[in-house]
Amino acid sequence: MTTLQQAILKVKEAGHKAFVPYIMAGDGGLETLKPTILKLQAIGVTAIEVGIPFTDPVADGPTIEQAGERALAKGVTLRNVLAELAFFREDITVPLVVMTYFNPVLAYGLEAFGIACAAGGVKGLIVPDVPLEESDILRETLNPQGVDIVQLVSLTSPPERIAKIAAASQGFVYAVTVNGITGARASFANDLEGHFARLCEASPIPVLAGFGISTPEQVVSMGALGDGVIVGSTIVTALHEGDFAKVEALVAASKGVLEKSTL
View 1: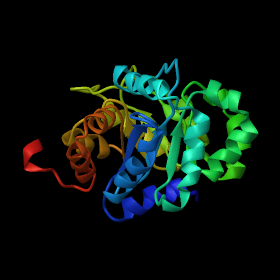
View 2: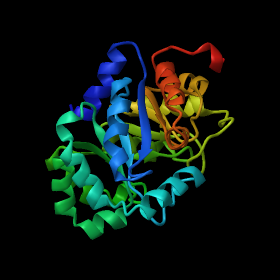
View 3: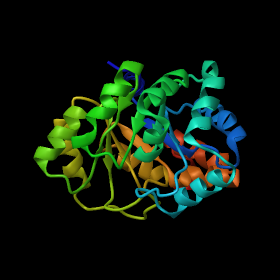
View 4: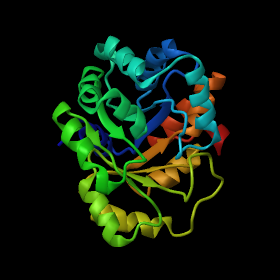
């Protein structure tokens, strides 16, 4: 069992749902990365998804795209993010999952990238523009460095493909809850419950819901479908605006606590 999977199961055994916040590395400057990660782990997140700024983020909505543009304007790159993580690795107590696209990894060099991930304490990798059929190249290089390759499952995936993705994914299965890009949503598809039931039955590892989740109530309802949630755009906005109380309320919801102000 991998480090990432263990962290999620530990939360499950405690009777809670896993909560994974997405952050854009270097939004506000690379110097913000360490304090942001330390603050998030201090309030009890399960793992942290660390987004890498990229010029063509095809899976991301306006909020995360704009955060990436702010980070790029500060000179933030995949290389200096991993170097910064390695600098304070001893202070990191939760698994980190890097989310990037394949071009920066290819430009870095697969072997060198894997070594840098290990040095930075990275335990998982999400590369949304590498399909299942091409993902072996990532597993072959990253698995020996202790890095899981997390696969995404869409709402439109047929049962046979769901089974293949669930079998190949490591750490957890990333269950996309909307058809489209990232960003807050007021509502979701009607048959999510059936979709998640089929996915959870097919998956030997935890299933986390992501895309569109933005309120404590949605953390509770979406988390109930599987083993936990990933929250991105709302976290990115809250951190950019300095509203950490909003982040704390989302994390509290994953532990079964809904503040009165959010009801």
